[in-house]
Image (cartoon, rainbow, N blue to C red; front, side, top):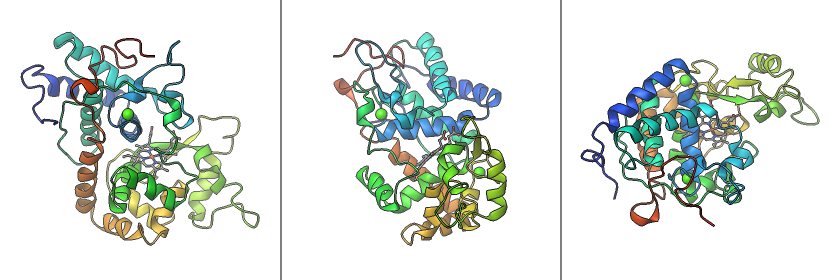
Length: 308
Ligand code: HEM
Ligand SMILES: [Ca+2]
Ligand SMILES: [Ca+2]
């Protein structure tokens, strides 16, 4: 039910407005692209691509999705770029463009800005009516999960193993906080402090970065140590050389179910871009709401009327 030209009549400047805001924001704050891609992923996997992750707590809805542990590290810049676009669009076409559509379009435009592939974003999503921290569990992957669990999470949303590997190529940009990978550096097992799969020099460098992580929770490392700001296939090449940051990144190159796709994407950036584009188009339409199943929020962080 979505449409590439959904706003052609009602908000003809939609594309340009989003592109202008995104460009300004990414230039002044280059971490925005990765931040927004992760935000979009976290939104779509829970209740679908419906901006449910934007809702702020209030006296009726005390624990929205944002309060779930896994969402606490979602960066402010990602919310900010969407809110800026929303504010601009409310001036030119009030009440027309959903936050869910803005997030989908913003993510695509940012991926292009950092060198990634173009893919089409169909529009007409409505913003959802549900946002509960308690409904996040089981829908998002985390570093402690086994490959079985991770494959299952993606399979539940209709993704194949290859599509999961392609989407996780999102880790070609952005960073992770030390607590997400510190156990690979300091207390891996009873016999060795370091995960033997990490390249020793890489482990040494990460140990320096994360030396104070227990007291300084803001310490973080790039997900792709070689080209952290560029959307390319370097992430997969890194995995082959022991330069994967997270345990789950490394698992992709070890598990016989995922390794073939890793090797293919490492060898051929075009193959990665095609697979990533296709998987993003799929992610972008997960459980979308149209018609009365949703609304166009006036503000991205609040439902239009109090819902009990
Ligand atoms: C295999 C499953 C995945 C796991 C276990 C995982 C886990 C993580 C973790 C722990 C972080 C660090 C968060 C922080 O410390 O702030 C992270 C960052 C990130 N993830 Fe994933 N992720 C997965 C899949 C994905 C997918 C499918 C995408 C996109 C389509 C994605 C995009 C990102 C991005 C862009 C960042 C960087 C965020 C930033 O720089 O602000 N991840 N991921
Ligand atoms: Ca959602
Ligand atoms: Ca990269």
